Image 1 (spheres, one colour):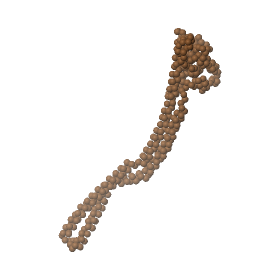
Image 2: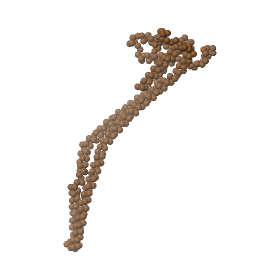
Image 3: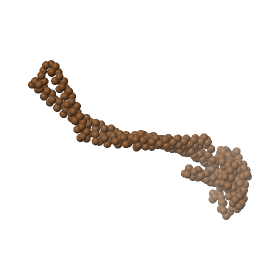
Image 4: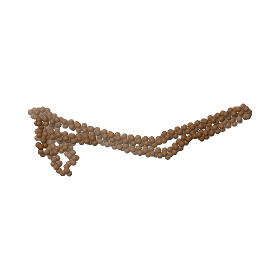
Length: 352
């Protein structure tokens, strides 16, 4: 069916009630039947889309797995915190309270008194030993020399007792400092286990989220690459039509009168709308080649353009020997309109 015949059919269909109008899918199918589908960019490898979906699915699965891990570690953190609150915190509070009052005056005095008593006891035991030794050696314990030695020993005992008391007090102070240091250390690490568990949980969520986002980003990248390839093919298709458009323009310049051709609506009748996509499909089916007129025919020069036979077959216009310039311009403009509609559709998809 030629382009003119299709236009007639379309006009007849348009006159029917709305419920009989073909759907956009039906019109697209007809457009493909006449070759309109060939103007579309070649279909990309379906594995591209499959890889994109698999990437996103893998990211979601990883995110779900890390969510499960986060729930487990959060439970650990709650258990650790509960155990610290009920078991270790009371012990720590008791230890800290004792550490704060460990070096009290009463404790230091008790330790000092105990140290002095121990020192004096040792001195008395040593003095008794010296008396027994002196008597065994025949020395009178009541003699002046022995009494002098005993007084010196008593003085040494007093000094030793005082020293032992001071040492005991310092020891209490050192113990208090050690206990306070331990209390500070406990305070610094009072939530080590819960914090560690929470850190594991947060890291799991972070890694899971990153995995999901990486999957989505990879999906978007693959689909964007696919779309760019389609757009490049469209540009290549548009460029391939430039030769035909230039040839039609040259023909118009050769055969149109200087003042232009009559094309007013008032001068025309039997008007029929040209369905969308038909003009582009007709041009796509027409071979466009470089050729030269045979000797004695035409202008004898070299040209680029379609053949009248093919033009008549695709459009129904002309006699199969010559190409009507008005129809050639009309088909070309219709094809430009169809291309513009397709490119605009692609741009809208990309913008969305």
